[in-house]
Structure formats: structure tokens, C-alpha cells
Image (cartoon, rainbow, N blue to C red; front, side, top):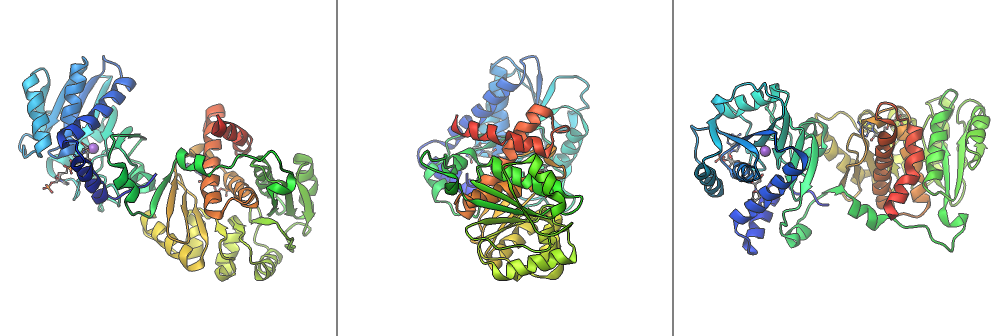
Length: 496
Ligand SMILES: NC(=O)C1=CN([C@@H]2O[C@H](COP(=O)(O)OP(=O)(O)OC[C@H]3O[C@@H](n4cnc5c(N)ncnc54)[C@H](OP(=O)(O)O)[C@@H]3O)[C@@H](O)[C@H]2O)[C@@H](O)CC1
Ligand SMILES: Nc1ncnc2c1ncn2[C@@H]1O[C@H](COP(=O)(O)OP(=O)(O)O)[C@@H](O)[C@H]1O
Ligand SMILES: [K+]
């Protein structure tokens, strides 16, 4: 799914209206989608306090108030009574609720702390039209709402947040539990500094002009299930192990053999035809007894001391590798003579950063840094938006794919596209999860997924398996190995 800027979304709204639906009916449709979602998720005994701004986001709020009231919900509306300068459609919907009479209309200042349980706040103060930070009564009311512990549902965007950039310095933003956003995800939902305000996000299809969206230019995309289902290639019947490639997972060192073991297991669980671990001899017994399907190539005593080049294989290098001098030389020796795409992770990246060997990375390779590894490779950035920009520049300069790991991992391509992943959870914030991703990536590339699709599919699959593991064991208790064992359930889900 594409991600558009606030101004593109505005143009999309305008184009949709030009295609035949009136703006007030579009608002009715958008609000109706919110109203139905609220009905499905809350009880008729809950009390709804709806905070409305003067723009169309406020208009949505008034319409939602009317719809909920008509369904028998207890609804109160809060506005800034000193600023009744409504947009046309907000004005129409404001008049409608005044006519109804049964809905209390109050000033922000009249809003006192709520002691009553089962109160739900609907935040319809500002949407994508926000153009400066909140101040005055808007700021005060948001601060007050944030200080009380009741469920908050934001309409379109948590008020105070821009759709596509960081808020200014000390901005106040509503901290939502749920965000009901229209038609498309907004970019700010995926960055740590801004995404934390959104809670659980639901995208509501309000039938905005599909042709406009198809033709809109953007570098930013969400990895959704449609993209994955297009991308996934079911296993062919007339095939043999050679059909599904050869993956060589290089890593492990004394005390970190488990890392490369998990990488190899992930490669096997994602369908690699032939899987090898290339690890120090001290790991041989452990690996061979834990995963008999993986072949073992010894390449040192306690550390990787050489990386042998084999033909027709895809290499995933880094998990548990360590940074021993001999390992550094082994990596240098390998990269100097190898020019096929490789997957580089963990200490392979740390060595490249420390030695300034970035130019050795073969074209079309994939690197999988977490934010700290990224910083070691490419330097400091002020925020995560800047980090993505730097990643775009580096992916182009080095002609590589960067899988920038985070809560919403981003795949950045050499032609500057950015794909945000929406699977995965904090149960994966445990040593070993990244090793699994390296194995998945290597396996998919060895099965001849093109590199962009391999990256997209790998991060989605990895996160989805993490979600399944969290469902089964809880975020706290799930282990990276549980994630790996859930990969099969993800493939079953894909074909169901
Ligand atoms: N037909 C459609 O288009 C549809 C739109 N839809 C809905 O409309 C929303 C977008 O509506 P919108 O463009 O009216 O902007 P919105 O976010 O409500 O308000 C911003 C207004 O407030 C002002 N303002 C800005 N910043 C401010 C600040 N810090 N403090 C104080 N004031 C501030 C600014 O005016 P200004 O003061 O700059 O003149 C601006 O006009 C969208 O998110 C969705 O919910 C849906 O119904 C589907 C159909
Ligand atoms: N809070 C989180 N939400 C979603 N995914 C997460 C979270 N924390 C970690 N992950 C995922 O887990 C993996 C961790 O990788 P990494 O930091 O390299 O771990 P390790 O070094 O143990 O292999 C990444 O794919 C990352 O996206
Ligand atoms: K809002």
C-alpha cells in the first residue's frame, strides 16, 4: 500500500469529490466507518466525550456524535466556544447536532477530570490539516486528556501529529489507544518518535479515488498482505532440493554458536534446499545435533578464520561472528574476491564499520543493521526520519538494500524506495531475533526471489511468525526459537 503526504491526501480528497461524491457525503462516509467501528468495539453503556476542532476533522467528530447518539449511545461534545470559525462541512454537521438537542455541547474549559469508568474520548480536534503545533486552549485540553486514564480514539491522526513529519520541538500530541485512519497509513505512524502516539491503528476504506492513488508518486510504501500474497511463490511440485538453492550461513564463535544455529534453522524453515553452517569447530557437535538437516563446514577453532567461496550458493554472514582479528581477515579475504549479493548482519557489519570497508560490499547485497549498527556504519542522525533519508542515500551510493531493523523495520532499496513493515511485536526484542531474519533472507534469496522481494517477504514473514509466537506464548515468554518454529504456521496462513 502506498503512503502519501498530507498534501497528496488532500488532493486525493479533492479528486474524489470531483469524481462525483459531495464533500459532505464523503465526510458522512468517513464518519460512518468510524461510527460502525466504535459500535463494534464499545458498549452502548459507555459514555462518549467527543472533542472537535474547527476543520473537517472536527466535522467528522460532530457527525460521529450524531451517529452514536442515534444508536442510543450517551454522547457529549466539547468545542472551543471562543472559536466557532468552522469549515463548511464542520458547520453543517455542527448545526445538525444542535438541532438534535439531546447531545450536550460544552466548552473545552468546562471539561473536568473524569472519575467515571467506561468513558471513551473521541479525538476529532485535528487531522492532516494541522499546520503548526498546538497552543492555547487546544494545547491545554490535549494535556488534560493525556493526564486521564480513559480510552482514547483518534479520528484519522492523533491530534498534534503531522501525517508525514516530526512534530516541532516541544509539541503536545494526544496519546491515543486507537487511531482510525482514512484510506491510507500515514508515514508518521511508523517512526518511533511519532508512532508511539497512535496506539492500535485501523485503516478504514472510505473509497477515495483509486486511480489518483495508483498514479500518485511516492517513495514510501507499507508492506501489507496484498503485497505479500503477490510476492509469495508456492513451492513447485516438479522440483528437487537443487531447485530451492543453497544457503551458507557464516558465523558463530566460542559462546555464540547459538546465533548461527538459529540462522541456519530459519533458513531451513523458510524452504532452503541445501543449508550449510560455516562455523568454528567448537560449534560442530552443537549444530549437528540440534539441526541434523544442516551440513557443517568447519572454518576455524573458536572463531571463523576463513570463509571459503563455494559456487551457486547464497551467503548470510554475521550472526555470532565476533570481531576477532582472524575473523576480520577472513571477512576481508572473502569480500575481496566475491561479487555476488550477500546478506551481512551483526558483527559482519560492525567489522565493516570499524575498518571502513563499506566499498567491499558486493552490489545488490542486503545489510540488516539495527539503529546502533546503522550509526556505526553511516554516522549519527538527529532522528529516525533523518536516518531513513541517510539510508536512502547510502543504499543508492553503495547500490545495496538496507533492512533497517526497528519496531517497524524499513526496507530501503537502491532506487530509493522505502517499505515499512507492520508485522512484529516487542516480544521479538530479545537477543537472537535478528539472527532468524538473516537466515530467512538468505534462504529466500537462494530460492531466487529477487532481492527486493526477498527483503520485503523476509521482514513480513519474520514479524508475522513473531506475532504468532506471541499469541501462543505471550510477548514476555516467547523465544526467538519459538518464532522460528511458527514460520510454518505463517506459510499455512498464506495459502489458507
Ligand atoms: N472532504 C475531505 O477533505 C475529507 C476530510 N476528512 C477529514 O478532514 C480532515 C482534514 O480536514 P482539514 O483539512 O479541514 O484540517 P483539520 O485537520 O480538520 O484542521 C486543521 C484546520 O485547523 C487549523 N489549524 C491547523 N493547525 C492548527 C493548530 N495547531 N492550532 C489551531 N488551528 C490549527 C487550520 O486552519 P488555519 O487556522 O491554519 O486557518 C486547518 O484548516 C482529515 O484529517 C479527515 O479527518 C474526512 O472527513 C474525509 C473527507
Ligand atoms: N519492539 C519490537 N517490535 C517489533 N520488532 C522488534 C522489536 N524489537 C526487536 N524487533 C525485531 O527483532 C529483530 C532484532 O534484531 P537484532 O537487534 O539484530 O537482534 P539480535 O542481535 O539479537 O539478532 C529485528 O528484526 C527487529 O525488527
Ligand atoms: K484527530
